[in-house]
Image (cartoon, rainbow, N blue to C red; front, side):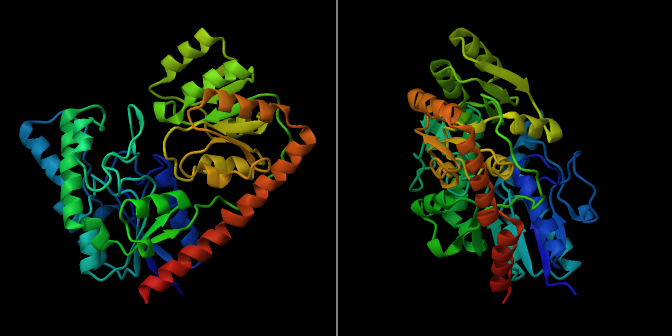
Length: 408
């Protein structure tokens, strides 16, 4: 007998990024523990097969060439999609839903789906994978670094500083979207609980005006798959992820040059050529290995002495770090966003001031010079942290308790 029926909602129904991975993982975990699950998303060529897709919202490509009239229609849909709400209503009419769990719904689905859920009396949980509920541009970062200018409702700053892809038009549209949603309190009135994977995101949203009682800190989880004991890697450290400015890779390359600690960089992104040129000009011991996934990526992780995350924006709770911890690899991490929550200094890793080349060079040297015997102890501590805070059991108990509380 089912414990209840969860409706999982996300823009994309394929593993496009971290939020989609959590969307699928949460649904699968709940089903394994006796909950029934339905999906609601947008049609997309890459979507995985789904029996609920007959109800999905139509695909909209905001980047496609369009006439002025078509652009106006798209702009209106970003703010409030009547089509997405109507399609969701049809799905709800076909079954009983006990609780809805939303992930990334902005723009394509819009908060119109939350309005429909609230009208039906269905409690809504929303996991936040970024800071969109506070910052119109998602990241609280612009070209000059961390930015909180929109705090207090000053959303005009997103247009003034062209925070959306450097575009006046796009930034202006998102400014209007944010102003309307904030004025109507459309998210605040239609979400029952907001789940933050990091404690930092909870505190930041409170700081920006969200009510504390609406916010619940539940860390994401990794599979309980058994892995063999980790062995210390070589003398190099590994970064894996997107090659974009907010990730701090330029700082990492400069620190590698200053400390003579070899680093390997796995990933692709718009900054790749610039970073390769920087490494060459500095004579940094940095090797670019390209995009890796699956077994090839985990072989790189296993071969590294430690992993490094030099971010210069408010990271949430990076699953890449938790997955590396599960494999017994400690972290050299920037003290920004949710990253410090993952570091027990000298036990699960080493921290440094975000954006500080000298301090990162110091931390890289610490990782390189740590004795293998102590590194083995750190591997155990990393795995213990995963079992204590990021296991399937811990996540399920917290999330199912939240579902049960809301459906009463």
